[in-house]
Image (cartoon, rainbow, N blue to C red; front, top):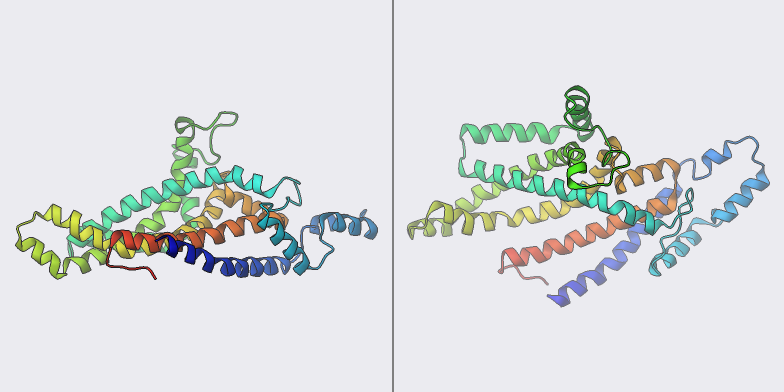
Length: 317
């Protein structure tokens, strides 16, 4: 097992290098640049602009700057923000906690509801409840995330005033589960709805497939109860395909957090990425993109390990 983990980590190094190189090159092609707003100042002379670019290191060719950035990353330095001057690593750590809290709760809610609805529909094929779950899943899966968030804001924050419209806690009040709980409801619901709709369909299909296997018939012939068959045999085998879906959904969940955190003013990595993108703050953007790339590689590795845990017949090479 340890040899497999080391092998996969070594294979991920050139992949991460390629991803960061492509991201850096694409950021350089963005129109404007970090000095776009400063350059619009009519009182800024060409000499002052050149001095500012030299101070920020923007007068060097982008391949040279990429090598410098990569060297800093290898030494644990992600650079400094072009606008605040703060270390990028510090800024990421400050925003990491709120994002993990939001994503963790959304993942837990979507897994619980998705698995429950999927198993319910798989055990009752061609029933009215299964048909209702299927129709609702298709509608919710096709609903744009940003539109759903606007509807939630309009309905539950503006009209009913049941939940706050944004933020993480009341102004000037430290975050606690009691003070910040109401602020989590709408963002978590916005992130979880699409995943519940998708994962319930995957689980339903897997349950139907496993229920038709011979070992289920053998378990019934032995006189095992239906509950024991479902929990010990059907569910364990039906969750194996879901592992890949869930692990691959985590990076997209982080991408959805950009929209969610921006819409609900949640102080996480998604909001940080959006603010940095609007200001062309390249070091901050590269820091967030690097974390996203590492997340994708880590999710692939965890999925492989969970395969072996759920089904010992699967061997990792």
